[in-house]
Length: 226
Image (cartoon, rainbow, N blue to C red; front, top):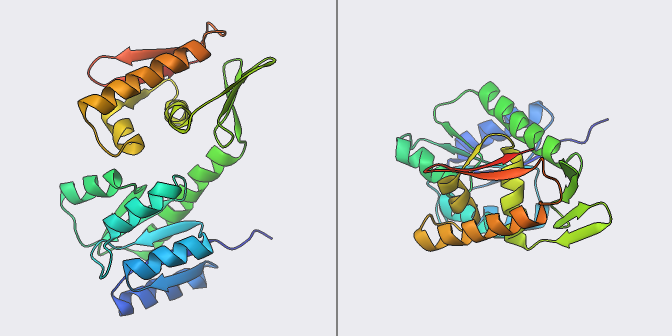
């Protein structure tokens, strides 16, 4: 039997929160419902849910702030914003602050459930095997190692995260601005130069396999080809 999926729901509208909680529980989810951002953050720390569904406008701590604080220590747990704020900039901000998805109110429960499963399925596939193949190399993001035959390189946290993002977008363009926001939280000249340095270091560490390339795509970002 598969374990039940645990959800942290941060929603300050008590009635709506109860409806969502009960609806998810009828589908075999286990749901912890918090009415403000501070309680939600404490629940996240203690319960380590499989996914977080959070509103933006909440007392004590808003959803964007909550997402930022979660992302300081956890870069993988799916965060799904659920909000009546529907302007394009609101959606952009949701992803900027670490969200993986954004649903505009009003919404259907079926859509919410499908999106939760999709996010968890994506994370599950990424984590199914900690060691990922990059050409002739083995890359282990959690251990921050890159291995080639008998040689192993230990990566810094940001080197490993840059390589993880490149691998997630293998043979496709990794948008530089999006990567900078994900890694540093700010898209500016200095972080852009730091990113270029990390790319150069990774190229050197991957040089033993000539089939692997990390190319610059002018004005757009980088592409890992392997």
